[in-house]
Image 1: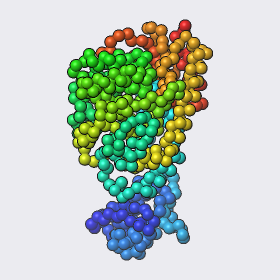
Image 2: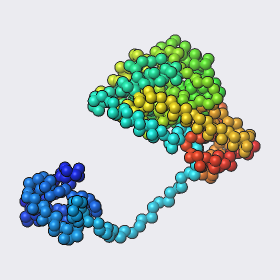
Image 3: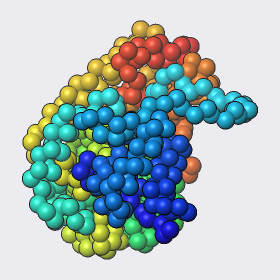
Image 4: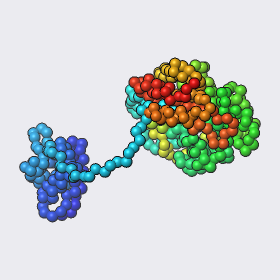
Length: 478
């Protein structure tokens, strides 16, 4: 008998996949296929089977043949048939599982009790209700072309929303046609310098000036693209941009002007102006990572450097801190001459940032709900920061805290030579946090102060007090 493949049950919305083959009559083959599907668990207890008519039509056999197969399996106790409920797989005891000799798993080191690492927003505060409402409105009003291949530049709805929002909140001067949507800051770097995430080639070449403190992940990403990082000294006024003039081969610089990562201060206005003057004179480019630009507590908003010269600054942002890194949405505000080269690298179709998420974010921004969420989180994070500062003032007043005017973390300045011991003590206390030295560029010159980078956004409220107590116990004594 030839094999038949069945996708049935149109009436009840259930697809049933059977291989009806083997010796004997059609009824025998169907009965055997159903029996095997029930026995090996492919048809779970309670599963409703297709009506006689639909299954018979798919198989090209008589309804009585299907009815007879069902009746035989009902008699065996494998199926049940009740008026109004149809034919279903019978409830039955699960087949005995084979006895297996347990294999002892390798010992695993227990995870930390408290996570005070930087860079993570409060996942519990994601605006689920607002996001779902925005998604419903966005999808309901989306044009048909939104469900086709994605535009590599990004949906026009999101680019329009971002252009208005960034102008209002960050002082960015742009139009929607100068914005390219990407999946985050790292993706933007790959598009600009090459590597995974684009065509493999980048838009920019040559060495790149970077701040002496930053994420090692970004340094590694640039190194994989063949880019040499030239570190600029960082102090309490941000990167010393006057050092750019000392590096004749450098034509681009990556800065975190709103909130230097991880030391925490904004780039001083004199150094902002010096960086822009350097870019104009050298024919260079500034890459502005708008890290933590939304979360400021004790100072007036620091506008974007891009507002000083839209043709010499690439403004880079994302929602990884304001909403969630799970969304994988970011943007590049580009000088006009870079838009086409970046799009050429990105490719003909959007392969990274989902269109529906873009439409939802656009709706969230234009409705004002994004602003309200950021304001709520600003208050929440400020309260977290204040609790950290108060705990240190009470239990470790000899420890100086810096970088607390904005952002999601603080830097605890330690006595010289104590960072490694403090990290070890923190591990004993069940704390996960980072030392300042982990963010220092390997070629950075000058002294390397000891410190701890303490994130205060991640721990749940009920555990935050215990995390702060453990932190204070781990700090070196006065």
